[in-house]
Length: 80
Image (tube, rainbow, N blue to C red; front, side, top):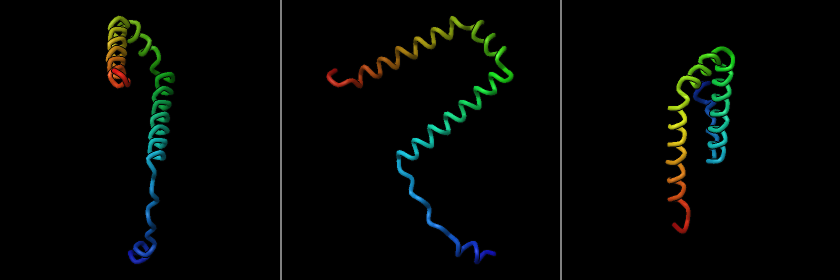
């Protein structure tokens, strides 16, 4: 059994950077889809209540994140 295991070793297939990024995106999309299905399937009233209760705070956080991201991209623009 051990001899069979050792003799049937195959060399690993090289993965390019593009394939790694593609696999990562596919995994993220699948995870997001599973989470979204779970939210819609059973927890949607809780999500709606959360956003209805804390929308003013969430709006501030979203605007703040947008401004931070805008500043970061502004610094990355050529010619600045």
